[in-house]
Length: 244
Image (cartoon, rainbow, N blue to C red; front, side, top):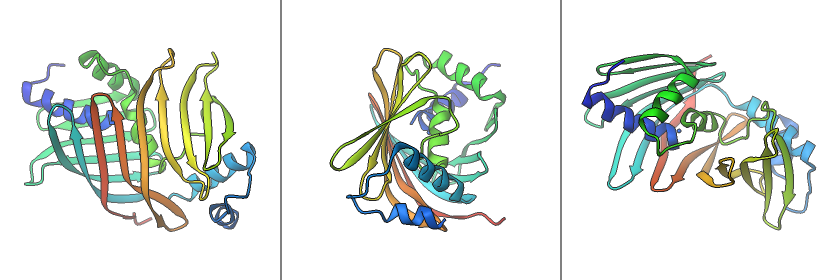
């Protein structure tokens, strides 16, 4: 598959996006800082929070800062793990349409199509942008989960506690720290997610802020992603529940 120069620029922009891309729950959410949940209670709380996230659609503004600042707008849809993003320029030009569902991914740009596995798309992007080693589509999953950790993974979590925050460290089967989640202790909301390579070097920092209620869940309307030298800000201008 051969990409034109124009489409390659669109893929770089898309790659930047991807790179940087109940009652009991109510009781825990309003818990005072003096309460001290165990690891099991915290994980159970986040599982309930994730299950409470409804199907969503919205409009977001994406700003990317590298050597220069550039940006675009995108329509966002997420439902049951499936994600659809339609990127466009403010004056109306379509940049790309991206759909992810399960292990499959489809990208349609103005001149080329890609259909295949998420892993295949990751390999293509890394082959053409060797300076980036993060799994970009994984970051979109974090956004769709409202910044909540993926508890379905086999990674082993360890909880530590500080005066104003909880820290969840996740290790793989070789005892490598894969990612760290920083949690605001007062309201148990995820504030940051840090991603590491096998050498312990931090690759990406995701920051979540401006949480707003949507039905029984809270969703961050502001997401900042840092990976030197690139920085991205995603601001949801509108976000509402998709019709069932």
